[in-house]
Length: 436
Image (cartoon, rainbow, N blue to C red; front, top):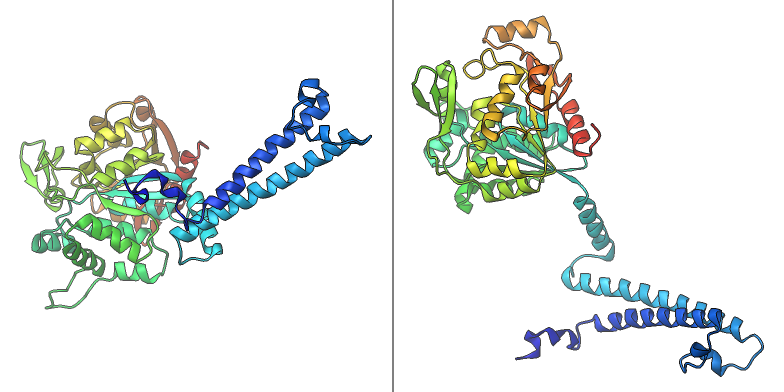
């Protein structure tokens, strides 16, 4: 066996670390010897005094013990200098070999950032739609590691067209999450948000962010990889990924027994939903998504369209099982308004019960419920769409052995009622760092 291919290659010349390891070893030996000298001097033990290693036996001076103590202190000081220099130079030699194109300051900054990053709490948000983007906006910029596992069952709009024409998962919800993780007024946000308005053009109605994801998917032949590469390209804070790489077609069975396919078709039916399910029950999860869920400190489910955005990822057994057996704190954010065609007449506890049906009891730790009162003008607008504030029946949720956090977690923006990113982000931070 050649030495270059064995464990003995450490001793090859030119490696640049043996000398520093030797310095550290010499420093440690000097510490041991100085302690030995000090103990001999203090104890005055004859056995020790007769030891040939004791330097005092070679000194003939009335202040022999004091001199030995001074020598031992000097040896300690020398050993600390040798150990410090040895470790510093060893680290510098290794980092220079591994990262030759960076300066010492850049390397130290990189080490500091990596260390700081390891201390962050890991938050995973599962869902899709505008509710999820509000959560991600609230978490952006905080001392957290953010990941979002997003539904890819959209069948309408630009996403639906790209899905049908290019045979790729719909990118709409994922694009919105990428937007939520970019800085306000940044070029990245403008790129992801831009929508073409060109009548008689094939681009009319398409979103630039959707097209970029679609194009990268064709280049990489991997939808998930395309999303991750786009996020890195645009310097997006956090990780956004689909819950599956396969085509996920959502179906619904209504109380009257009829069944329809497609998210937009489900909501357009305006019938009471009995259950939703994936057309292909054997669909596989995106494996990195499982890893993020497994390693999370806090798993946030919702808010968003209950049956068409939040529940689809949970329909894959391995995702549901990973949540069940995770050590993370599981939080469910209840919608602020009912949604016509999905959650008509639903109270807060009804939303929670639908998730409990899938995940089982004693999985959800906290339910966040909005209790803010909205303006008459906004309520009138929503009333015309058969949408109403979700009743906060807190006691019914508590009966499910779930802790309830109530507060003003929603806001009105441009006549629209949405979850407020600021209080949502703050309460999740408190949950993550055990301050509630």
